[in-house]
Amino acid sequence: MGRLALLALLAVVMFLVIRNLADDGDQPGVDASNDPAAATATTAAPAAAAGPAGGQQAQLNAGGQDLFQLASGSGLASRAGQRAQGRGVTVESVVADEGFWVGQPGRRVFVFLTPQARTRAGESPFQVQPGQRINLAGTVRPVPADVTPFGVDRNEGADELRRQGHFVEATNVQLTT
Image 1 (cartoon, rainbow, N blue to C red):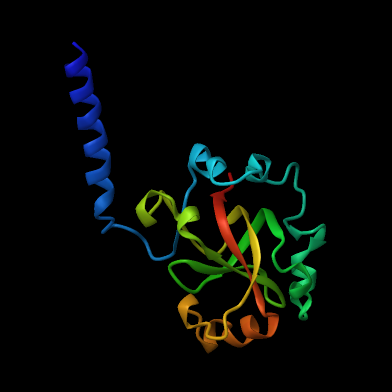
Image 2 (cartoon, rainbow, N blue to C red):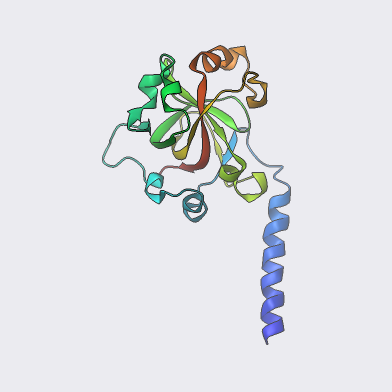
């Protein structure tokens, strides 16, 4: 009986792996997990997965400071290396498979997903799209001298990203409900 149960479990695992190998039907956008179990497993602060309660304003903070306010200048540098937590932030635009802006024009921050945030072999159950509200956790990092790896061109805010000098490297992104 034990072998039969093991074979059944193996068949289920193989089915799930094969089903996720070819995500040909994916919509354009950024892959991120909306599986609460997977999302909270990737961050030390599961409470960050909760959305704003009762119409609270979207928040993106690091070290007790509002990153949207700091983004209008070069203030993000003061938060380099600190943990960032976002609750109910709006995706302003998607510019790459792993990168997008949150906030609104003039008060936005660039987010780049780590492989940890993308979960399941680089793919996950939802695509980040403009207008969606998300929760995120990550770290404020300096922008590399060449922003090309992010896939951001001049029309998508490359100059703004260089001027800000920092972005949020997300290890956890979850779609809010």
